Length: 108
Image 1: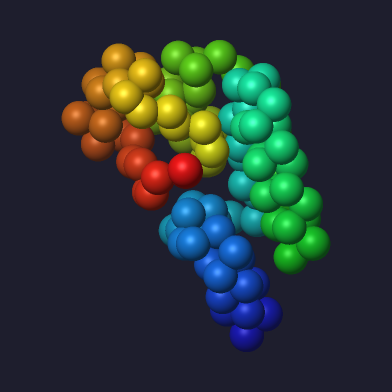
Image 2: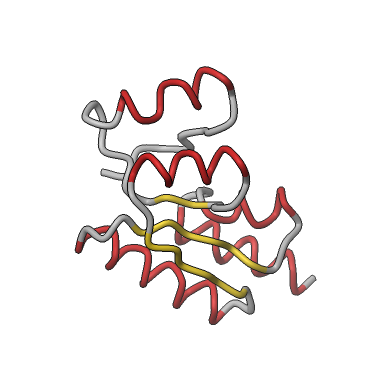
């Protein structure tokens, strides 16, 4: 029941973005990529505070955009909250086409 409640609360806040990572992976740690932009740092920080309060462990890795997508594809990173399209099309296209990185929803 506790796990279900966490999923419902997280889903309500994140619009099913982050919880799908945590629930699908059945993990207790959610790893974020932060590319060092102030808006991404802020949204990532808010997200980790909420997840921490719900009992998840969180980790933030400071990575470049190309390394972020490679890390998402390899499973070393779970969430990146800064996909700016169409400017990142060149960075994500190969991973999206291969099915190794998904865009769950628009950020803005």
